[in-house]
Image (cartoon, rainbow, N blue to C red; front, side, top):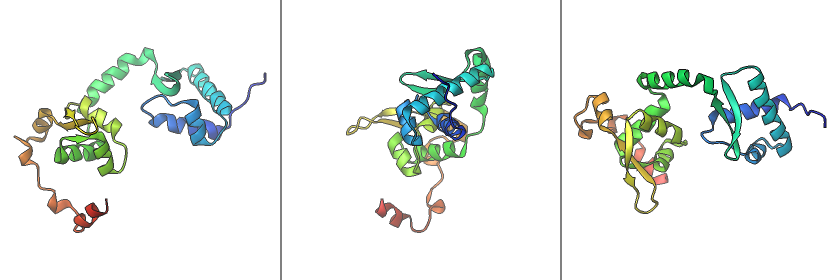
Length: 185
């Protein structure tokens, strides 16, 4: 059997997708997204994984739970842990601030509702906010059983608020045609 040299564009596409996934992605799903044969995608994934290992990279591409995903190497666990803990003091990204605002003004709110309001998937950002203690679970929605989220007391503390009633009014920051926008949804 001859070694197939995967197309560099295929490898770059795989890397781009795998950098943003939260869960392992199957070879079939990757093949469909990249519009390539599954065998070609599988070969490229194995090649990339081997290259990262051979180069001694700080990350690894592994096949787990029926899919592929990037992981940090075990020998760097202490560094990653220190970064994550110290990162608790880091500033929030624009996406995190937007998500936090939606939760603060619409709580209790489900992830699906946050995503609908923001127009993008907010699962990763929501996990970050929960990990940082700014957002917490607030029960489940009766109809869908979806988890609901609310801001935490730590959020109030960090914002310097006694309660949610002290949040600024949104009206001055909304576009004039907000009612029209809401009616079209």
